Length: 142
Image (cartoon, rainbow, N blue to C red):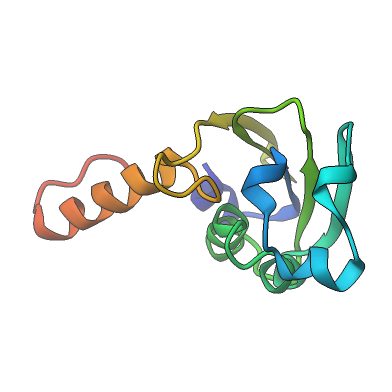
């Protein structure tokens, strides 16, 4: 959908990522800001800024934002909000894209990877599908 919207005009792209504290452990942004995840007891916005800033702040956690930026309006114009929620067991990504095509809103609730809780299991499956797509000549979808 974003590829199609990009053929016209996209006014805004915003990703809000909700993660459990375990998924954000070790993020450079937390150390710089003196944020202790163990002290957060309710849903809290940790970060709001450009995708470029988000990638630097959360390099192991923000692959969805980077992919969205490359598919859409770029690293500077893609807005990212990172929210920690101690009640969550899944990584949740809410994407809102607006432009002259209308409005696109999607929400994905991903289970964490069994071997790395900082990424989603769906990201692992997507990487496998991409590799299979490289070696498979039949293409389905865009």
